[in-house]
Amino acid sequence: MKVEFEVNTSSRLQAIDITNEVNDRLKGIEDGVVLLYVKHTTCGLIVNEAEEGLMSDYVKWLGRVFPINGDYLHNRIDNNGHAHLSSAIVGNSRLLPVSNGKLDLGTWQRVILLEFDGPRRRVIGLKTAMK
Image (tube, rainbow, N blue to C red):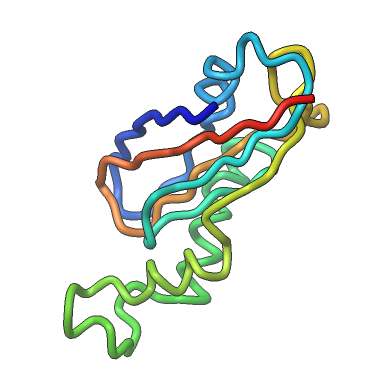
């Protein structure tokens, strides 16, 4: 099964918990895996805790590693070299287990979309495989 949904980001650097949106689309799948992926080169996906301070820390840390106003050759095209590099380090997909129609995550684990070049409309794809 392949499904897509959209997330609208509201700022240049942002972390958004999308776990509930993913689970809403997994109903009816007993056991298997889901490949989550973003169809963009300037954002990424992680699985981690969605605590408010930590959510800010994700993008702040990457902002220090790849400053927005850094000296990137790509900036001569569209001024978002930092976002492409951040996305390359974070990654744009995750393969996760599904049990009883929802993600089989640990107690504090959540799926988080990291935006590096917003605000934008992001498309998240889900591709499932079942037993």
